[in-house]
Image (cartoon, rainbow over all chains, first blue to last red; front, side, top):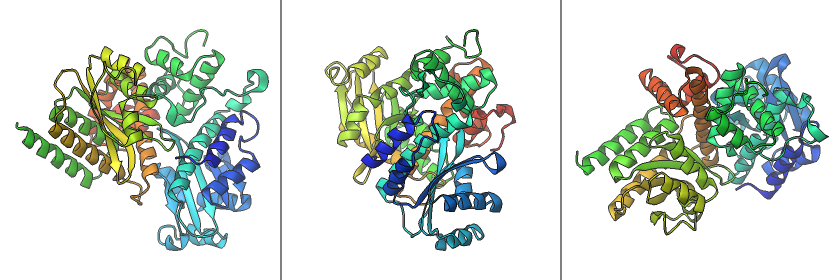
Length: 241
Length: 239
């Protein structure tokens, strides 16, 4: 089960609304402590379009992300490609796998790296990277915490990536009710996301954000709106939507 | 075909799948169908727990939206949740006498024509990672042998979930479960895309998706990801 410490961090991420990156320095510190790591960063996209949100050892995080992009290899790249966590307890044992990245990261003082996909089904918004200067695996509880943090950050980054944060919201408060972690969505929400992406000719990520915005604007739950879309009582490309 | 023969074939089929490169949701879907054939029940499904202990519908003997709803309702209360929390099988639970335990679920299940329900734990050593759910429309109770076979099939499901490709460390249960749940979500997104694109129901969309995966020897989840991201089905013959 999720640790109390990480549950508190995730509540802060969700409650961050539209202000800043949604994860304060203190919350990020608590998250890193729960995971037993020195730094955490979340990368979205790559190259000039990419955004890296870094907490803890920021310069190390940024250097790791840049290296992965420039060298085209590393745990983050593999994680992104396969969509599964890549957990490296000790980089010194990964020289064959990443012949350029591994020694580079070790020169930065990094020994353990954990990369988790930031993903909702077929929507991928990037990877969560946690790193530590000493070797050693994530313990069972820490892995659970890391997965939960990844879920929370996925929603946060999705909003940023689809520029939702640029839209004014009533009272300056971001949506809260129903803005749960993606895995707690009902299956219909994911079906509706697919349908809306076709109706509007937009990406799945944009479709999910539009669905949530519609639910919020109409003071309805996401599940209800999704049920209406799936049963074809509602189209988001129709009049008044 | 005798039941013994059918059981042998189901286990051989599962073993064949597991030693090969396989898709976890497709595997669970097939297993749920075998449960129906072997145990004489009317529907079967599997629920998996996420890292917060919330149960999610992952596969069912028939991908029917109304049936899937019966699994979803159990995220709050139902035999699967009881089974998961207590690590104990729920067997031959009559939906009338148990209505007070799970009022919403019991009502929906009865509306579906079911009279009794069962939930067997998906166990890995001391950990329970989900439950196998069985539904019966007739009055005959599930016998001792049925329960043993059902538990064996539940154990096979657990092995399948833990044997998913991609993750090298076999002990990362939480990551394995999350990967399986994400595959399920991608399939739902793809069902939505196909339903809208071809003006069919989401149930029909699943049939189309699975047939295309089978015909072209693709992983259901890989195909789903490509379709969900906009690739035309006809053009996907490899992912």
